[in-house]
Image 1 (cartoon, rainbow, N blue to C red):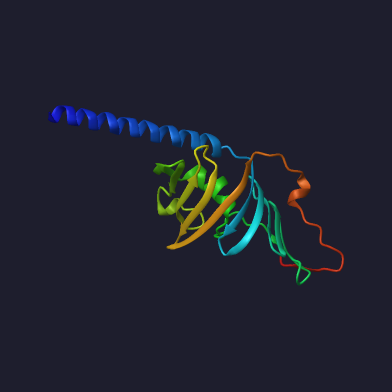
Image 2: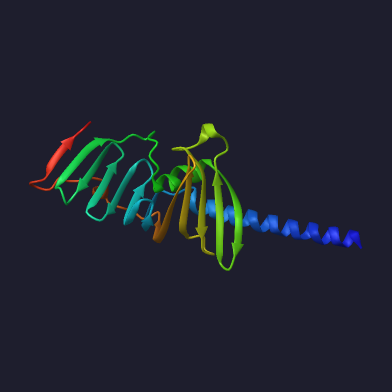
Length: 195
């Protein structure tokens, strides 16, 4: 009797392991080779916004009256209410936590595991292999996906603090014009150059 119980348990464990491996393979096949990503988000200290990002440090984030644009060399931080644009150098080693780093950097380096899969909702955890390999102090990221592995929720743990983002209108590997990642200072606005 015990033999059949152990055989059934072993078969169930093997099936679960293969299912987990399949989900993780599909997940990495979808996200590890990303060139561009765009989505709408809420949370993370900002009420809501949109992001377009390209691997290599180019991005455009819009949140209310604020727009932040990077071309991978310069960053423009524009605030419409004060008609001010601050220009600074892009720093790829920055400790700032930014959601596009999850898609472009964390997904490429961190170890993944399937946390749960039920009712069409899949939760995948990305975990730093060691403290030395942490990106921006991020220890873990939990990603909630649908059955097609479209990410709908991101929970980032960095140095004990948790930042949560709800994601919608996710689009991957679209082509964007180079002008998407530059910013022209409107006439009459103040430019503050801190390079």
